[in-house]
Length: 348
Ligand code: NCD
Ligand code: ZN
Image (cartoon, rainbow, N blue to C red):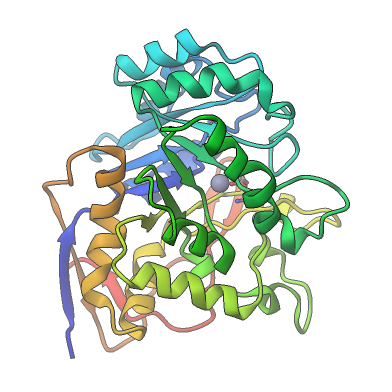
C-alpha cells in the first residue's frame, strides 16, 4: 500500500477568511497547508472595489503569523454598481484574480448581489476582454424553486444564457453539488468553463444533514444533495479532468451562530481538508490524481504557476488527530467531521 505522497503545495480556489478576530483565528489553518487561496469577498460590507480588496489583503497579511507564507488571491464582489474600469485596474495591478457573482439573497451576506443581469453586462464584457474569471455562486433564489433544485435551475435559466450573452467570459462554477453541474462542465467545448468542488461535498449527502436528527454543522450552501450527486462529484474530481479543482469553501461561523433556530450556512474544513481528500482519492483508487485536483488544475485555469514547494502526505496506522474545534477571538468554530477516521496526515 502506498503510504506517502508528495505533491506540489496545494491551493484553495474558494475560501472564506472573514475579518477581525475570526480572520485572526482561522487564517493559519489554511496557510499551514495551502500556498494561495481565492478569498471570497462576502464580508459585511462586501469587498466591492479595488481599494476594498487592497485593504482586505493587508488585513489578511497582518493576521498571518510571521513564520508563515501565504498569498491571498483577492476577488471583488460584483454588484450592479461595479465599475468596469475599477475592475480592470485592480486586475492589471495584479491584486485581483477573479470577480464573484452572488445572485442577490443566495447565501450568507449576499444581499448586495445581482438581481438584474443587464446592469452588469458591461463589466462582464470587459472581464471577457481581459480574461478575468467570474466565480459564480450558481443557485437561483426564487422562493418557489425547491432548494435542492436551485443549482440545476440556475444553469438553465441564468448561467447558460449569461455565457451566451458574453462570449469568451471565463467562468468558474463554484462549489458544484449536482450531476447536472458536472455534466454542464464536462460537455462544454469553449475552454472557458471550470468548476470547484469542496471537500465536504465529496463526503456528505443530504442524509448526513437530516437523517436521525438535524446536524447544523453539515449545513452549507449549496446544500448537499442526494447520494447520486455526491457520486458524480467524486467521479469528476477523481477522473483527472483538468476542469475540476479544489475550492474548499471552508466557511467558518461560530458555533453560537450555527446552533440557532435559524443557523448560518457554512462548513469549516480548513484544518483537515488535505487528510479528507487523500482518504477520498485513495478510496476511489485515484491517489495519483489528487495532485491534479489540489495542486495543478487550479493554477492552470487561473493562468498562474504551480507552486514550487512540495507537500508530503503520510498514511499512518493510527487515526490522525485534529482538533474538534478551533478557538477564535470571535468564538469557537467546529471543524468538519467526515464521519470516519482519517489516516493521512500532512507531513513526513
Ligand atoms: C458561505 C459563507 O458562510 O460565507 N456559506 C456556505 O454555506 N458555503 C457562503 C457561500 O459560499 O455560499
Ligand atoms: Zn463560499
